[in-house]
Image (cartoon, rainbow, N blue to C red; front, top):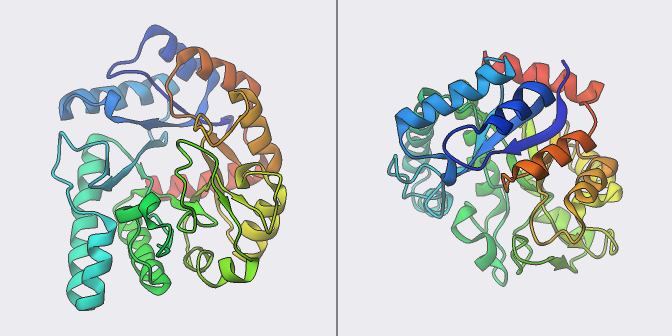
Length: 314
């Protein structure tokens, strides 16, 4: 399985000649879609079919952020106005109704994604809301209650996998403790490991997810010099050991403003620290080529885990 350790993105609703070349010759691990790539259901199906034709892989990972409400790439096609926090609040008042309703929602959403050809949805958000920082993650989180986050996160993975849709837990080891949006700047958290372990790390410890996405945050009490995506200490000691995550670890978008280096450096630092894949979301074709030529082919660990993923996607 020769795949490059990168998830790429494209610029518009159809493949350009250079994007076709990128997919057919360079072999990225996967591709993530955004609203700029979506005009209609028919167009999107054709686009995804074309993508898989050029990579010559019927199960090629096609990802999307379809959390609902504020993060919905398919908003113009489907009515996904509910968000994770809605189900978290309902869970507090009536657990049985919340669980049944959420399972029904996930089945419906997964069926819609499968019809379109999308096979990975980057949910659930396992960030636990903090009272003084919750404006950043906001309604993308299930709750300020770590046990509710854990429970609804588990349901997300189980229901989506049953429908042959893979999931991505995020933002490991936890973004709920930050009061700065990493899309715009570099968040820094000054909480102790004991505090983080008690709350923020908690939901990730119980996850059976095959894929996880990092948080672009500096945890000053763990590694004051490096953002977590660039920190081997956080990835190896916290994510892999303390949390015990055993699946494929991808970076969050390496074009986000929390990262201060050029794209190639961001990619290399992510992989060197212990990420298995890098995620690039801006869709610039020159940068896609520059990045894909700078990253290695996936290693034995990632090959093995990708094979496990493909069994679910069959």
